[in-house]
Image (cartoon, rainbow, N blue to C red):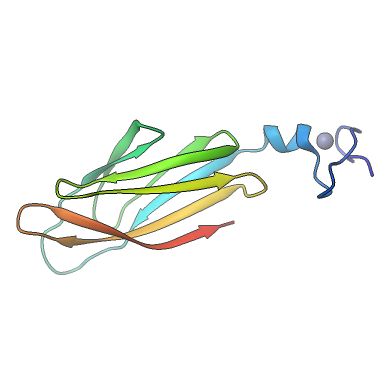
Amino acid sequence: MYCTECGKALNEAGICDACEKNKTKKIIVTREKKVMGFAISFPVFIDGEKLDNLGNGKSLEKVVSPGKHVVEFRCVEKTITQEVTLDKNDTVEITCKASMGLIAAIASITDIEYK
Ligand SMILES: [Zn+2]
């Protein structure tokens, strides 16, 4: 089998490696909206690089290369690390929820969805 777009041979999974590399891979991080209580934002890092602060009910996204990526939620009291792999999937969506500690937000990951 050959790729209908570029004419190169497809791999065993029927995917064209050349075209797959050019596709946009994206990591989307969403924080569930909390109505009650105060909402402290906390920074999200992807591969050690700060993306932005994630506020209550907000989303952040980053275009990434295919392969493994490390997503970190750096709360004051606890850092949550999640490894994701993007190969066939164009987008991975990580949903987290924050509960408030005495001095800071503590995040927990509620859902990871590959699309
Ligand atoms: Zn192709």
